[in-house]
Image (cartoon, rainbow, N blue to C red):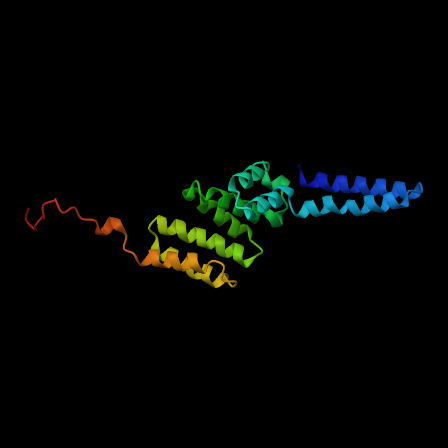
Amino acid sequence: MNKYIKFVIAAIMIAAGIFLMFNRNIGWGIVLVILSAIPIFLFFKNEYILLAFWQLRKQNMQKAGDWLKHITNYESQVHKSQYGYFHYLQGLTLAQDNPAKVEPYMKKALEYGLNMKHDRAMATLNLAATALQKGRKQDAQKLLEEAKRLDTSGMMTEQIKMMKEQLKMPSMQKHMHNPNMRQRGKFF
């Protein structure tokens, strides 16, 4: 649903509430005016994003992804303050199935902005993981330090510690040698 339709629904509810108050149904009019706050709230916080967060809290990534699929055009359905969280949730739902596709979503989420520090820490941690997978150790180290700085509550200390251990390990491609291959000398 377009985000501006929610304002129209709220205006109709307020008008109906005032009409009921003038026709001596003051109680129902007050209830309708109070209930008109729901569409106004849903203008700023998209209902599909809220439902996706609820499913994410239950560790159900499949249903969270299904709720996010209801948002077909995020620019017309979601308020600007929620653009970052839309991309953040898209990246989190794809993280288990397609870790290579997470990077653009997390970059967009950080670009649009996330309100909570632990959300920014999780996004930078995911970016560090993809940088480590692609062999960019310096970028991964910088992103890990930023994630550690953002993680003030200490929720991701184990993941950061584990990724730092992975950074210390040598990359296998540089150090793999086949013992059956003949040693090549300077002149062969």
